[in-house]
Length: 303
Image (cartoon, rainbow, N blue to C red):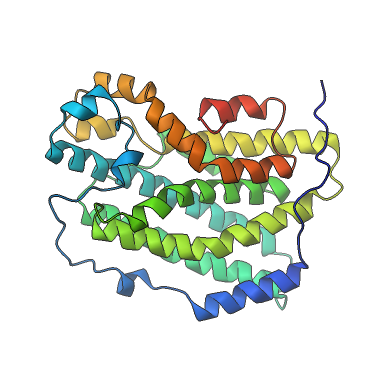
């Protein structure tokens, strides 16, 4: 059965108009993490690495049995895992943006904002790396197989699926970090890093959302089918990579039990689904949810 096209996709403004507004916003409010984050501040022993309700074990029997020290240590490892995946995807994003503007008019505001975004992402990547280093965490990153696939897939990052994938990955980080930055139970470094990323990524997400809309105008059903699967595959691998399984062993937990309880953690599944509702609404409106893509979104609890 063929899925019908959406009746009306989200409206987009003129490409140059959008870029002018975003460039003006960047000029008014951008951050240098090397200055804004107090990298030399002590790391409090009683502060979580991320909002505890976002821990993959929160709400499980194992979580209830853990000491405060164990919970803090686990969430530091989970935060480092999330940041390392964010760093990995930022690098893929920069490659995509540079390829996309390579042959475009460099005098255009669209290209100039894309280059501004690359500069932002460079700073974000260093910021994520520095945060993991400051907490003394391993350099997690995605599974080696996914890392290699990213290198290959990055070469084919094109058109609407590239911007949709970027927007989706950034939205996933955004939905977590909006909670981290406001939570006084969380490490000060995590809160500041999250605040910087959320505020600057708001511009990047707007840029990507409108570009998705432009590039899907008059898209055929066949092209939409390809874009759906491509975008869903990226979201699936990003979500699956967020928390590496070795965080449990590194936090001193029974790895097999932790993995089993995390896999069946209904609280975590509900948190992801609720927080990802805005992203899924946009993807659905854009015609990027349907057919096999729904299976992938369900597997990572976004549907």
